[in-house]
Amino acid sequence: MVIRECFQVIGGNSGLTENIIYQNPPKNEQRSVKVYSGATLDTTLLGSVDKDTVLNGKQMAVFRAPAIIIVRKGLAGKTKFVEKGIFTINDDAYVITVKENYSDQINIEWAQKVLPNYADSCITSKGTNATFSKEQFLDMEFSYPPMQEQKEIVSIYSDIYVLKCKMNALDERLEQLDHYSIHGDAICKMNAGKIFDLKGGNSGLTEEVIYWNQPTEEKDAVFVYSSSTDIQTNMGVISKNARIKDVPIKIFEGPALILSRNGQAGKAMFIDNGMFTINDHAYVLTVKAKYKKQVCLEWFSYICEKYTKNCVTSKDANGTFNKEIFLKEQIELIDFEMQKNIVKKKRSLYTIHAKLKTFLRMLDEIGN
Image 1 (cartoon, rainbow, N blue to C red):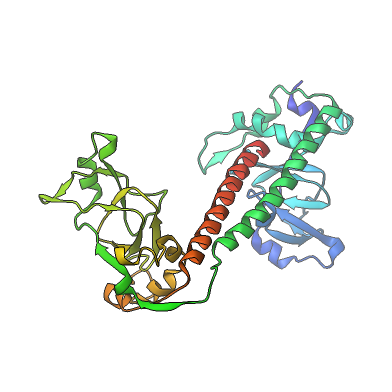
Image 2: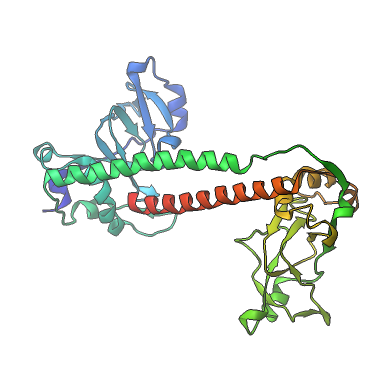
């Protein structure tokens, strides 16, 4: 059979604009109709409109769930299942329902999971101007398993959705915890310049220099960072033997803290170990040998921005970090063992969060 035998696909309302919705608010809750568009998500509803709204002299078309919304253009072929209630759409989408004589053979929520596979073949292009061809879609060969199997598949997807909601809530909670600071009673205050060395990066370390100085062996590779990068988005690698204007590049080694000098001025990034280098948009901060048993640099990386942000000329994108002011900052130090315990707890939290994000990506792949 073909899709048109068991499904009907109806177009939306031409002229159902935001202005029309604004001018026709629902008179009461019973007359309220949700308005969907090509965006198809609950979070991007166009709003609600009165069910007796008139468009171009005609009564606005209203649809009853359960139904599937399929996008006609833009995000062409994307679908959304509407579980209950009445709703309407503009002409950027179609509404798909099961024909009455197939209602006991096809579960529409199951259909919403499989029809996008058919819709993919009916899209003119994959860009933002893509258009979904209704007629081509309706003429595609279609088959379906027994109703009980469809219901079991829907149940599995439902369980995945519930799990994703719980995992996303946990992810948000962990994001919040990641920004919390664990404090202890300060045992002393020390001048930053007494505790830390702060060295500048390499002037002239551009992408072109990196390109022409690639390492020939893995052991010679050095990561390149800047004020606008992080661990995942570094500038690439360069040979540790590279030279700029016949001067060897400065090589640093973790543990170290990279402090942005301009752009995101005062922002800090901790490098745990390994060799690296930076351009002149950042500084490298390390603990002086004398204080390595009193200051855990990874612990300081959690709290350092409360000091570094005080040393920025302005809070906008043109701010500059002032090295001399920072070196005069009074750093509150807590017990060294407590610093290490905080690092241990933060690392555990990071590991759990990373595993959770991996699991969420897997659930997204399964759910889609």
